[in-house]
Image (cartoon, rainbow, N blue to C red; front, side, top):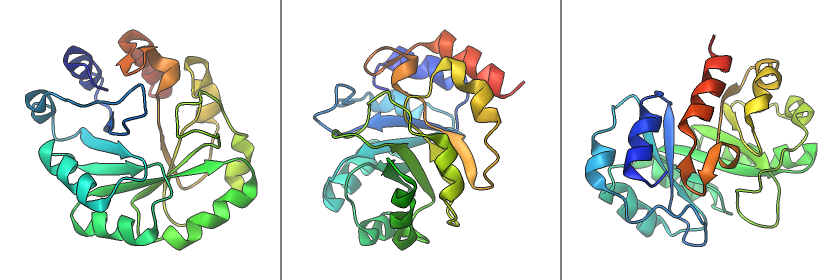
Length: 199
């Protein structure tokens, strides 16, 4: 998210989280953001900054600048960074790329250091591949930290998502398949999809 009117329109759908990407190489790079628009969001919508291998100092500077509620870490960030960000009062979501069931083992070290894990499709780049991994592998995840599902989720996936019964599955990350262009969400498409998930 980066366009003020689009932010307001998506906020009207009352998502739990709204993400703002602070990875300069991303076509969705959000800066500069209008702070007044972010501050006008209801407190029920948690503002999440998305970072890739950024320093702790820079992350804290940006979260303070935009009054963010949490961070989503998409790089090779270590456990101690997750813990420091939690100590600073932030919701911490750590993304893990998934290509095979073995990939879930690396989450064990992060137990207790994150509020949520995010399982995304493993690619050579960071995020935004628009591709799915085999959701059947989610059964191999036996950790305690609740997780969000990401990676190529599209408007026709509602039925499949409703069939996921993993006890730690708590939400989905919607991105490229719901965009008009990078960083600009198709609000009507989002609304229709969310209506299907919450009849």
